[in-house]
Image (cartoon, rainbow, N blue to C red; front, side, top):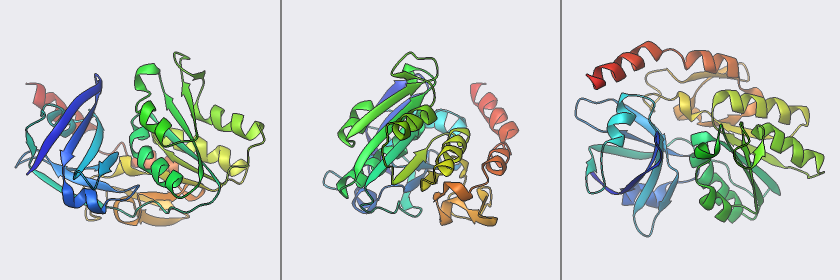
Length: 273
């Protein structure tokens, strides 16, 4: 079991959890994830590592309540423990000094974007982070992203904070300013990543996307995270979770992501009974 060191709600549906996991903290790299299980009879779910300290032996998860297991996880408190925790899993982000890197995080995708920004900055890149959300409450980890970036731009759909518009509007603004962008890394809802990809392809800017939201068992055995990348079938959990955005079939991915909606709804309804 892994002890929960800290737990707090960032918004009514998003919470931060710091967990004692010294071996994972010592090995984890940007872009990697863990798999946890809350109860003996519970499902295993993959969650991307948002932060960690090898010296203090902890990792941090930022989780949105979207189903039964994330709801059960949200009910645990500091001092309690998680039944099973394994990792780090997945291929880490390729980190090198390429020049100017724009890291885009949408909603809860800001959390997995955070260690990528940290690593890119440490490698000597100029890091510009774009944080997007539907409204001000959904723009998370601003302080942490500022610490990991040379510049932070914020967009909200409703204009309640930062620039009114989408993350693509912020990328376009940078391009219009004449900035040479050497790499874009985008993490967030598939529809957001799709439109980031369409924009950067137009300007021939290399772009990586993390497809972690489609993962289920995280080992490549269930096949639920199959995606088409460059017309080849890939498994997000073992071949990724990051891929060349300009090669990803986002429409196919979004269709596959709807596969278990009925079961997810039933599980949540049963939990409420």
